[in-house]
Length: 412
Ligand SMILES: [Fe+2]
Image 1 (cartoon, rainbow, N blue to C red):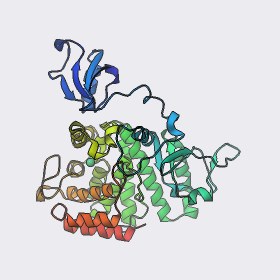
Image 2 (cartoon, helix red, strand yellow):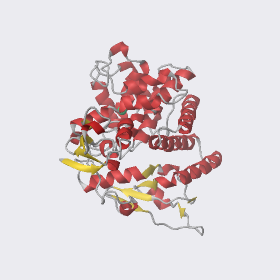
Image 3 (spheres, rainbow, N blue to C red):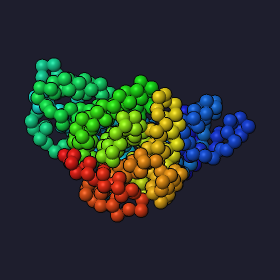
């Protein structure tokens, strides 16, 4: 449907179907195109044109007043998607996207019984996300109970409370020498990395966060090297929903451990593959969440093109960063490629693929297959590995073998 909307409401993912002004007064040669990048968006916003026409059949719709309501209004009871098919124009989907955009899943295993936390929690059980109400101490802080830790629900925090959660983790880390072992240390490394990557996705131009990501990769490598390849608690299992930051950390950990298992011992090489794989989906940060989390079967041709464009968007972003070794680029460029050249974006195949590209094509697929998301129910690790083994023309069998070994000795 063609709609006329105020220019200041346009977003990446919309399909422009004309400008409400004379052709000569616009800075564009074409007046019918999908908005794929921040550059395009900025150019339109700076054009001084008051209204544009969009085609909602080819791209995203504008948000109604109701959809623009503050997220807190819905947080009291946000229905969660079943893994089965869900129409993306359904209010369930809209609420789901908003919830996973504004709330952050945390790993319950990082919480210590009887400790007070300086942030509020939300419980997520199947279809419901609700604020947690348990006993509070005299300072009004939630106190972690045995029952909460034993319950099957997942826990989330509001994104505005990330720093408080970080402070809690730092305190736990400080105390961990007393009561907790290496597994606990790994969990805190992993959790800190997830928060950091989430921060970077929200603010991909922030160089301080990029530097922090480099430090995180070094920490991850040290932990894996110290334990001779053990990655227990360094990655997230039981992923009931897809979060790009959880995925990025998992894939990075899998890649480093697999590279190490293959005999790659150079710290510089491990760093390049660790960092490249941590940033491999950074281009996704330019996508509207409605596209990022939309069931693949509902993507329009334009949205699918937009999604595939995350490789080049990612390259553009990473090229702005200082001190990224060139060897960190193959994981980003090649993670959707395969041995026979039917992947994207360039159809690179066989020996033309970098070794880190071959590694990440396996770990990326594995992590994706073992994570539920709207319209897709996760398959088990065993089924995912069987799938990868069956696709032997696409993935390097020797590398897959090493990856299976890594998972085998680190299963949680
Ligand atoms: Fe990707």
